[in-house]
Image (cartoon, rainbow, N blue to C red; front, side):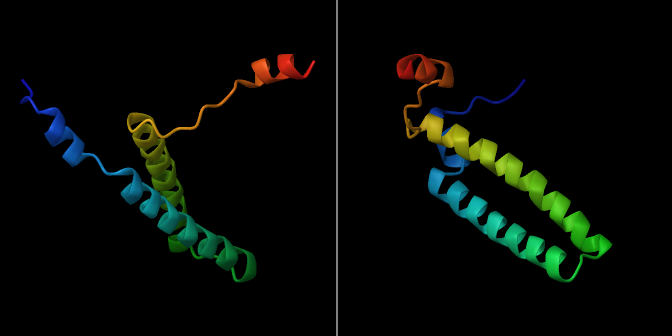
Length: 89
C-alpha cells in the first residue's frame, strides 16, 4: 500500500512552472546548438544519441509544463477551431 501524501507535500515535490519553463528553455537552447552542429559539421553517433535523449526529455518536460500551467490555472482561454470557423461565417 502506498503512503498517504498531503497536498502540500505533493505540491512541494512537483516542479514549479518557473523551474519547468527554465528547464525547457535550457533543453531547447541545447537542441538548437545540436541542430546547428548537425547542419554545419555533422554529428557523431554519441551526439545523435544525446540529441534523441534530449528530444525525449523535451517532450516529457513540455507535458509536465502544460500540466503545471493547468494546475495553476495559467493556461489562456482558447477557442476551439470549429467554433472559430462558425464565428467567421
